[in-house]
Length: 581
Image (cartoon, rainbow, N blue to C red; front, top):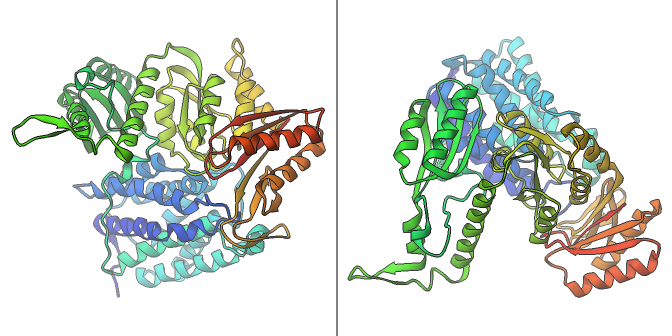
């Protein structure tokens, strides 16, 4: 008979093992995407979500149940990205709501926690769909309750049977969603959840596992504020020399006055401030000349974790120079060439962006948009968007990324344009977590929808009027994207071979073939069945201007009564993004 009660130490090991097992399976899970596109990202999204929490758990010094649950809940909520990641974060949040009240947990508590996890996750999704991760989670919870009713309290058979039944439910997901059956795959999110459960079970059984969590796992992606920031080419121009980051594990939730006072204090000792708060913790980023002042003030609010202090002047010097044996400095040519130079330029750009936003005049309403591609970013900025998060098709920003972006916009109300259906849930989670600013998510599922929404914003209209106008505008545009298949499959009766080009529209597959221009034109033909007046082509980084101009001319010749616009989007993965209005 194994251990029949889990204390915080063992539960922490099980959680870390769950995270590592999911990480090891992420590429396999990515490949289960129904559409065989090169950015299938369910495994990546779920992994980055759970690793955000695992990073926090791995830094715990005093592992008790309450602290552990705070790390799991808050870390996964902040790190949640993609629909599957958000649902996973809600499952973990619901589970910890029950577990945190016990020093040890047995089968009865675990069954209750499973039920709460499922309840919390279903409530977070506006239109829950069966045949997904939700169904698998519900099956696991149901089986846990049945086992308890049957008197099974030994955790080893209890866990084994729950996982066995969850796998049985997963195997049935193609019968619940015909699109899964046609593609020959089970639900990828459900498979991810199975890997979480299996990893936790392995740790429970005492298997030797590598539970090392990479440093910075809870930091998010490169879309977050950069640790290294420079104001100019000389270190003497850096006004505040230490980039300081840490998390405050709150003794109790901050009230409005405490949060306002702390933010004002940070403003008095530095700049480039990001402060994101929820009930359990506060994430701080500040550039200052005295990190100790920030740390001392933070300690009055709670314990600190994930502390990181970078000397930006020293890093700047070391990036451009190296120190000689005699103590003098000379140019470090290697450091300013190739990839190192590119990274430095990215850091400078990120710093410039932070500084520009910190100097924004205050306004009533502002915008944050998500997109990939330099051209796309410039289009949104030209439409008045204050902050562009780099992400979308190839990287879904986390809830914390979105909160960071919103906090950088000096506005009372910030509209968020996700521009991808897989980012909407993370944006809505940020909407609920924001305290100092009102976030309104305009649920744009595609780049063209986001552009149309931004165009329909009008100065002088109220928040409510603009919200209604932008949401109504989403239905006025058809969208389509052209990419390539990464495996053989069948979708909606169409056989697709690895390497084929695919045109995917708002309602599914629109065209396939071996020539990208022909496939794009075939998609436009279907869009024009609605007799659109404007066709917009955004060509990606893998398309030459010459080829894009030729396609524009072909479409214009075929539809002389429609205006055909061409813009360089620079987006990866997708050769063309097309809209018709």
